[in-house]
Image (cartoon, rainbow, N blue to C red):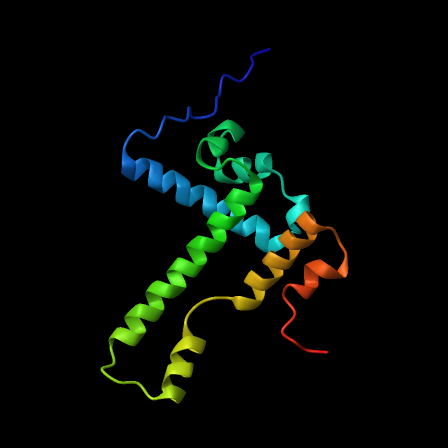
Length: 141
């Protein structure tokens, strides 16, 4: 009986700055997809690595912990938002306050998803008590 000799394609080391940046983006996209679907506490670095198609050790070369990976995801999304804001505001010599509010609202950031992810992270770090959710309370009683 013949056995299958099919093997997984061998991962190569990301040697150039462009290859390292592309690999980092792949990791962030995999992590963001998982953080959007599940509570922070349920996600493990091995799952992120698997989703990115990399070894867990490779993930740790880029991020020292799940928390640093999560913060990198948040930083990436906020950076994208700030860039979009700068571009939107840069098109106007003067902008009315009501139009400024419109520019803020129309930028492509899923604030509800981001807040939910941050709450999940806070609950995982601080425990499931009310304090984790009070951090994100908007003053509504």
